[in-house]
Length: 119
Image (tube, rainbow, N blue to C red):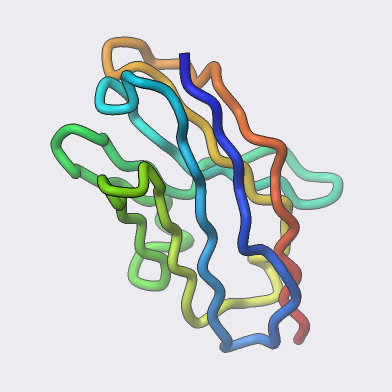
């Protein structure tokens, strides 16, 4: 079992940066893939980025590639999402999620953190 708590959202102007943090608790974090998803008002939730804890392998949605960077801090059991060159369309509630490496569905979710980008 893993518990997730996001932090770091806020209001930023277009072109600015924010860093989101996902604190993961549980003794088996190394067996998980940690992902970031987002949901804008009136839209479906969409995948943003993910990192496999044990290997450090990452993948990104095309819309954020080259602007966002996902990383992990082993000592603090946190996953960071560095967001640069933010655009108004990045405005959404961002969720941290986890799944075991051997399954395909994310079944652990954080409460979400709001990111608002003003144009």
